[in-house]
Length: 538
Image 1 (cartoon, rainbow, N blue to C red):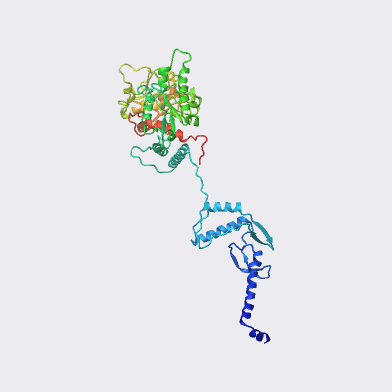
Image 2: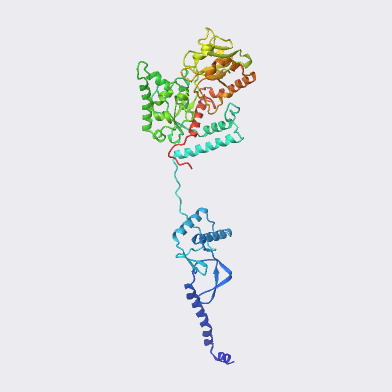
């Protein structure tokens, strides 16, 4: 009662002062006392609504959620989880994975956490606290711009070749085949018709060839178009006028050396000289030195993305003039003899084609199988190791096996081809021979009598499906082997030969899938299988 009466007797100002002093003291305590012991005064953290722990001043404060037991990494994980939660409520712009990564790296570099332990409870004290953005503001972490690598033209070409390889591989394993209004390869004549078709279409879409303009006719940019070496002149002319040619070497997949070996032999060969190889080989060496000194492309690949074409028998030997040309470059050869260094993995075998008038006029076509009365036919000179064996066993000895060194006067060579079921194609001094194509042109089934020979386009074509291969040692059994082929099987062979004939036809205005395109496709395949040194493949 005394306290009450005393309180009542005091003035109003005294009463107000008594009330304010405790509040002031409490405010001072919280403002200065707790700041010394708190490690999160300026940071935003989550709080627990459960257990309380005592502070130094005897009061009570909420407990921090334990998120940093394992140090900075766990704290950063909690922060990123918080970002994720805030993003879900659309309170500020979302962070990309790249920004998150850069934020983590910047945090780990700049923040130096000190972990203290007290009564098995872990807190983090940071020199520079990591502040989270306010929920009412929009923030975006600073992202350092990344400089993209500038790819070279060669690397861009390699990327496109990689896509082409993938498309071909997919076609080879899938059951789908692209429609084609001109021709859709099919049948056992192809090792994989779908892969070939896809590869051919990719070639038409992507392939570019740079033709060196250096060199003067008649040795360069020239060649025969009527002899058995006619493919040299035909290909050089068609390549230089083809849509596959590019005038920009930076866009080229391969580089063509427009050398005619037949012209070198015709204009430079000296049969009276003991060193007749030297001037012919020196011509090739000089040309390679010329283009390699003027352009960087030969030295860049050591000739691996360059190709030459030769139908003359001496093509392989003359290519030895430059070691890189022989070992590295793609050599398209009629004389595809593995015993003379032909490598099917990098070199191209293409057919020797005799065009007496310069065109196919009068060479295509023949009667049906039922009207062919001769079992097998051959006529040709005696040279090389195989023909003497053939003539020894069969010359003028059997009406069914018509083998002649010289045809009787008045007998047509092409007439004999058209009247025969099988046409014998033995090697001469070299493995190349126009007889295989002559057989296909006239509807006669080719019989290959050769050693060490890689047939034309055999990377795509299965020659066993439309021709007969007889080992040289079995020439004495020739009639038995051919007569043992049933009529049904013979008709299959003949029909398949007529179908693949389009790949051996020579057209002045090139047509899809003809011999020019098949040669180019074989070069395209070699380039697809090649990976140049010094490139990064992603």
